[in-house]
Every structure is written in structure tokens, then in C-alpha cells.
Image (spheres, rainbow, N blue to C red):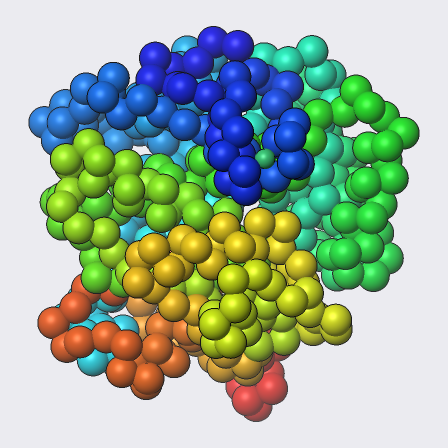
Amino acid sequence: METTDAVAGLECVDCGTVIEATAEAHRCPECDGPLDPRYDYDAIDLDRETLEGRPADSQWRYAELLPFVRETAVTTREGATPLVDCPDLADELGVDRVLLKDEGRNPTGSVRDRGASLAVTAATRSDADDVALPSTGNGGQAAAAYAGRAGLESHAYLPSRSGFTNKAMVNVHGGDMNVVGGRYGDAVGAYEEALAEHDDWYSLRAFETPYRHEGIKTLFYELVEDLEWTVPDAICYPTGIGTGIVGLAKAAREFEELGLIDETPALYAAQASGCAPIADAVADGRDDLDPVERPDTICGELEIPDPPAGSWVLEALRETDGDAVATDDPDILEAAVRVAQTTGLEPTPSAAAAASGAWELADRGAFDGDETVVIVSTGAGNKEADVLRSHLMGQGI
Ligand SMILES: [Zn+2]
């Protein structure tokens, strides 16, 4: 597989084994732990001026810090999303500045395009003709889009509760859409059965491929550049499976290692109370997660009852002096509407968990008055306009 110059292999997050970065590699051959791309940062020659001289045209402007060269990338120019000042939210949170990173403006309307671009690029370097994944919705839509672009067959396993837009667009992109009765765990089961029958299918499941979380790094690079090389004090990220938290923590380490920044932000994982295994573990001071027995939240993207790399996510939160927070569905829907009405921006209900979490953290006194807080909106509200409008109807509007 043709990788960028500094790639030094894939490292197992659980046991430290390092293997060659091949397109076929998924989990650790020694212990089945998740793999993470490693780089020789001394071999990366990247300074602020070099980056500033490049157009902000896609996440591939950071190719030195990605595993694959830009020429081989399967890309629809994902990334390069705006960081929007939200002064009304800053007033409400009692901080100096609040900025919203609007990932809804990616090609398929969610942050999932970043990782899909990398993971499908890897798939094209293997012998696979088919890619497959379980998904809460947006990941399946993104995978279908990028697989279609690359000429691969895609198989998505979505729980029946996934949004209509996600299901429809998997079909529209030419993907094989499998709606599984029940919830996300049932979709994972159906996916695993299908993969057992088709050993030539290439998995795009988060943390089975080393490249989904890797793509989210670029979100951090962009926001630091947009803040003119200053680092926000806090980043609130809506968290289900945890690819965002581990990706952001790694990106911050990398920019610090390269001398591009000299501090790192506190990362806050925002979850919904109806499915909050990460926030529960943080509150209890545990190093691993207890699966949620009966997940139930309107935030379908966040309803991951048993995140497969939970201890890695917890480590990333600790490493950044961050925290986790969980808020109730009505508060999350209210936050989505408040953001829409005061900023003009449109988060999905799941994305608005980050805003709702930021309010809760502010109430707890987590932020100082002179701080800058970034809220990541991971998906476009028009994917779930019906859910958002239903909340208004409940208020008699
Ligand atoms: Zn291992």
C-alpha cells in the first residue's frame, strides 16, 4: 500500500504491537485490539507558513499527517468546514468566546465523511470489491457515498430507528441498505453474521478499520488554523462510539509534537443521559465501560450502548484534562432549537448534545469567563428536521 513518507506502521492501542500499515490490516493480530496509525514526526517537515500557503480546499491539505497520499485519495473535498462565532452562546455560557465547528457542511452532511474518505481509500488499495459496516445512520450514508465514488459495493446495516434521510441516501448512492429491526446492537449482530458469510468483505466499522478515527484529526487541525494558531480552552464533542474524542486528542498531540502549538485543549465528551456509558464511567472514576442495558435516547447517532474502544476514549479524556457530561433528551432538543434560533446554524439533535453538554458544564463551573469554547456540530439539522420540529410542536408552537 502506498503510504505517506512518515507512516511508521499500525500500533495496537491495547498491547503496543506494531505491524506494517497494509490495506488489509484491521485489528491487532496478537490481541484483537484496535489499531492506530503511527508516524515518525521527525520525518514530517510542516510549519505554519507552509500550511497557510495552501488553499483550504479539503482535509487532504494535511496529507503529511494522514496515511495516504492525496493522489490516491477517494475524496469529495470533505473537511474545510467553517468555525462560526456565536456571541449569543458565549453570553449564555458566560465565557469570552463560543465557536461552532459546523460539520453539517460536509458533502453528505456529517463529520463521518472525513473518516469515510480515509477508510474507503484504504479499501481501494486492498483486493476488496465490497465494503460493509453497521451504523447508526450517518456513517452508513457516508460509506455508501464514498464506496460509490470508488466503484465498490457497499453494505450498510442500520437499525430501523435510523433517520429516513440516512436510509434513503444509502439507497440513492447505490448502496445495499439493510434495515435491521431493533436498535444499534441488533444492527451490529446482523453485520457480524453477514461478514462471517462473506470473508472477502472489507470492514469499514469504526475501530475495526484504523482509519475512521484517523480522519477526524483534520477537524482539529482546521480549527486551530482558523483560530490563528491559538488553542481553544475546551472542545465539546457529541459522543457515541468515541472516534471524535480519540481523533481530536491525537491531533492535538501531533500539532504539539510538530511545534505548531504549545498547549492542548480540554476535551469534553457530551452524551445523552439515555445512553451514556462514557459519562457514567468518568463519573465513577472507572477505566473501562459498563455496557448500557436499555439504551433509550432520541439522539440515534449517540445510541451506542457498548463502545468497542471505551478505555481508549476514557484515556483521551484524562490525557487532555477533559471530562464527560450527559444531559436529558428534552434539554438536548431545546439546545438544538436555541442554537438554530440564536446562531442561524442547524445541528441535528445528536449534534446538539454538545451544546446541551456545554450548558451543563457551564452550570457546573467548568469554564472561566475568559475562555474560548468550541462546540462541534457533527451533523446537519435538516437530516432530522421532523424531530426538531416535533419538539416545537410539543411547546405548542
Ligand atoms: Zn494488541
